[in-house]
Length: 120
Image 1 (cartoon, rainbow, N blue to C red):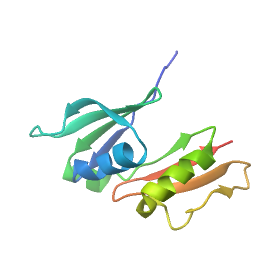
Image 2: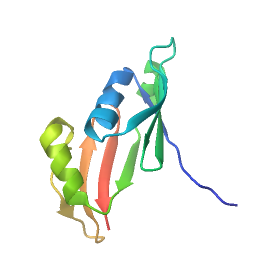
Image 3: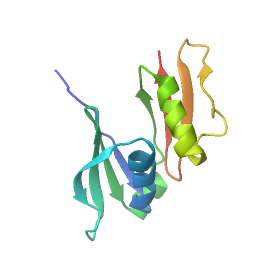
Image 4: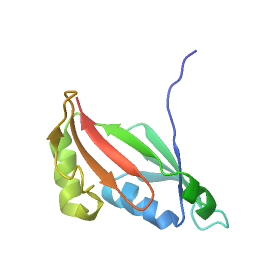
C-alpha cells in the first residue's frame, strides 16, 4: 500500500473563521472555492499540503481536531504569525519551546482546532 497525502476535513460553524487562520495567518491559498454555496466548502493548499474546510455547525460541535504542521524554519513561521495574528497563539505554548522529545514547537488555536507548529 502506498499513500501520497493526508487531507484532513475541518468543520467550522462559520467557514470565515477557518479562512482567517489558514489563508490570512498561515498563507494557504484557496484551490477550490464553494464558499458562497448553500453548503460552504473549500480546499486550501500550500506547499503540497491540502485541507478541506467545511461550514457545518453540527459537525463542528462534534469535531475539535488537533494536528501538526512540520517546518524546517520554525523561527520564520513564528515571526510571521506572532506579528500578523498573535491572537492565534495558544496560551499554553505561545512561544517556541524545546520539548523533552527534542522538537521545537509552538501552538496555535482558533474557535475550532489546535495546530502545533513543529521543527525537529
